[in-house]
Every structure is written in structure tokens, then in C-alpha cells.
Length: 304
Image (cartoon, rainbow, N blue to C red; front, side, top):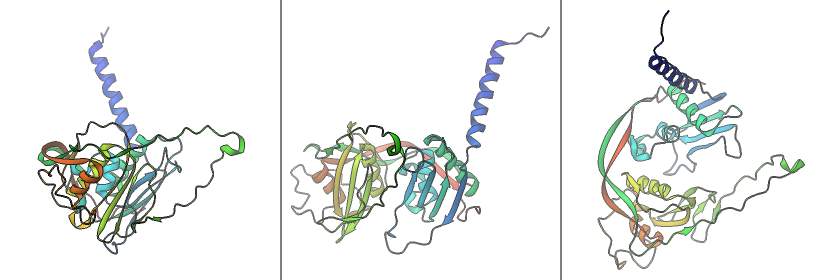
């Protein structure tokens, strides 16, 4: 009579479970997915929003969209990496696409990420690897003058409706607003928007974590920025600075007396404005991280 080795049986079961999980992930698909090349941008900002949104937890849980999105931008969402982790740099990925997908009912947000991964693999033939990188970056810290951000007020809980009121109602189409300084943008709802006017750039944030603000600093500097503030709350902010300062490196230090910043907000560099308006600053620091290196992605995706 053959005797079973308990350890071998356990290892076999664990292996089969891992293989099953991997196979199940690979089989997750959008019900329908349309991928179209986005026309080349007209002007510096193209007037178009960029990003991936919708799906579970949104007002349209069965529809998922990536608008004006590069492969690198879709990787950010699908794999949960930071912009500075991607190589080549996100800013160099200029081919844009529009993705319209239907999400199977009952899917979770994590399953939608896996569906997006599978779409990138199948339609864009995405190939990548990971490698360790150390480079010069920055740590986002509270300035000596203290934090000047406003902490967000938690939204009031809404009682579940009864009867006919429980039926979903169409949401009004958001309209852009123009503030008193001439900046035009859609008011963010738990997000962030950017606008440009008179040679200035304005970031408006709503209900954001410090790691999100660190991500904005990364997009401005092109270098890794980590959150070292120790702040766990969510914040609202308005950050206005000279558009000419985008891409500049942060200074090693700013004078504590504020002499580096003119009295007028006009012409402030992004980093002087960060300290004067938000009470935050960037400290140079060596950053080690796991890089997501894109080896190949088709510029013309597989047809729908």
C-alpha cells in the first residue's frame, strides 16, 4: 500500500492553489473593450482630461474609461506604481489612446485593475521587468514656518433612500468654472485639477493625502518624491506658481525669512510657492526604489 507524504501533499495543494489564482487572474476580462488611437494634441494642454476612471465605487460601476492615456499612464493604474518608478519616464510616452470598456457586473476594483493589465498584455503586447534603482530625489516635509494647508471636512453620511428614491438618478454634467484670477477648471470632487492663466499654473486639490501631493511634486520635477511629512489626514489646497518653473530642480534650501519669494504671488517658482502657500518644502535625498521598466508596447494596439 502506497504511503502519502503529508508534506508533499501540502506543497502540491499550495502550488495548485497558487496556479489556480494566477489562472483566474489571467482570465479576468472586460466584457467589451474599445481601444482607439487619440489624435495628436493641439496646443500645449490639448484641452482634454487625462486618466482612468469609472468602474466599481464610481457613479457608473459598469463602465471604465481611460481618456487621452498613454500606456505608461495606464500602467500607473493597472499596477499601482508611482510615476517616478516607470522607465522610460512617463513624460516621454507621448502616444495617447482612448479606452472604453464594459465591466462585468459584480466586479471589484482590484479585478478591474487585473482586467486592465490583461488588456495591456493582449492589445498592446506589453512586456516589462523590474529592477532596483537609486537616484537623486526629494522628500516632502513640513517647512519650519508650519503647515498652511486646510484639512478637509469629512462629508456628512447620507441615509439610504427608500422606494422610488432609491433608483439612480442621472447626474448633471459638470460645468467648468472661472475663478476671480482667471483660471478655468472643473471643480474637483475628491481629486485635483490643473489650470493655466497669464503665465501661471494653478493646482487645486480636494480631499487629498500627502502622498498625492508628493505625486504632483514628482510630476513637476521629474524626480522621485516621497512623503516624509508624517501627516495622515486629507487636505484641500490651492497652489499657484510660474509656469516657467515647471521642470526646475528644487533648491537645496530656502531662506527661513521668506526672502527667496517676492511679496507678490506672481512669478513665484513652484518650490517657493510650495513653502509660502502650503507650508511644505522639498529636501534633496537619495531614493532607492523598484523600477517598472517597459521593454515593449505596441504603438498600434490590436484591433477591437
